[in-house]
Image (cartoon, rainbow, N blue to C red; front, side, top):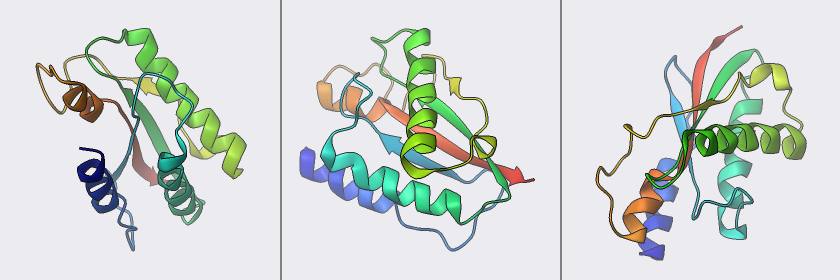
Length: 132
């Protein structure tokens, strides 16, 4: 499953040539802990490069976790993602709107039972909102 996830991540992370309103970028988390594993650092590197290529734009960060997490945990994940991008990539905080924790009713895989299914539901979405 690890290799399948890596391939899907590579497809998700294809670097766009332009951004339109509503365009979103997904970052996946392997567990409920916010510190990222080394194999996921490339996601943040590419996302930061993308965000920096649109300096006059706004982005919204939404946190999603699996059904076992609380709504507060979802908000914390989104806030952690925002803070990580600001501190590690020098992205101006004014570009990243307030983070939003999404509700439990918006998973990729409803009624997830296996750990692999839960992993699909643990993500942060960074959505291109508009140019300032």
